[in-house]
Length: 123
Image 1 (spheres, one colour):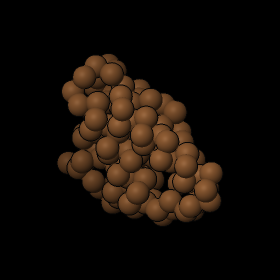
Image 2 (tube, rainbow, N blue to C red; image 1 turned 30 degrees about the vertical axis):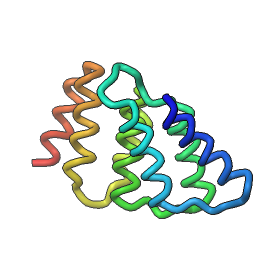
Image 3 (cartoon, one colour; image 1 turned 135 degrees about the vertical axis):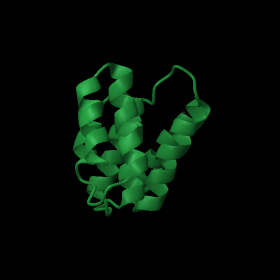
């Protein structure tokens, strides 16, 4: 839990200080948070996903493949599959890591047809 809280605080401090976030920082915040939870049954807090996504929009950060993948993975881990899919659809080129995250999220939630749709599109 500690690293997730630290990541939330970092993003909040950056926002309050007027510090402009970049894609690298935001993707690392998402990655660090999800990694800190490991394989536990806990999910990533939705507030972190929303906060980072809001910073991306507010700071007009370019959504490259790395950031899109990190955001999709974070939304999947927070159980927000609709948000994950919306961000996933922004990807310009096929990305196996991002597709796998979506497939895994759909399968874990029991949405087999959605998982198959993405799987078939990546072949």
